[in-house]
Image (cartoon, rainbow, N blue to C red; front, side):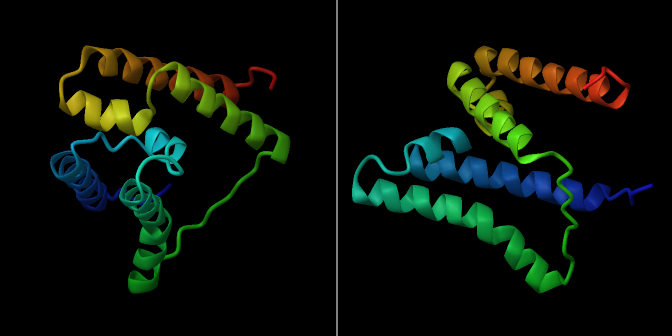
Length: 141
């Protein structure tokens, strides 16, 4: 059984909320990852720089924490490359279809009491719960 870590989870959630709030206040934009990544090469040079810095922070942040704390997360990927590619394409399609991703709707949209974000969040959480249940309880995949 994994360790129950409510304080680190609470701290991480608070930092995500703070970062999303500051991004909205300072940039006037929602911190939706799919929108930032899909527009990383468009806009003014200042906008491209900000988007690139945001994405770099997503990659470098965990590496910096691991370096400082010495705790390295064990990452196990037990899916084949074709499955990972298909999953990525489906996530991209879903983000496009839903006009946003989990971070845009689930964190930022719900904080703004957006009805559209509530529906989107319920849809992707429900889909994730059903998919996980089916995969773990022998749906034949």
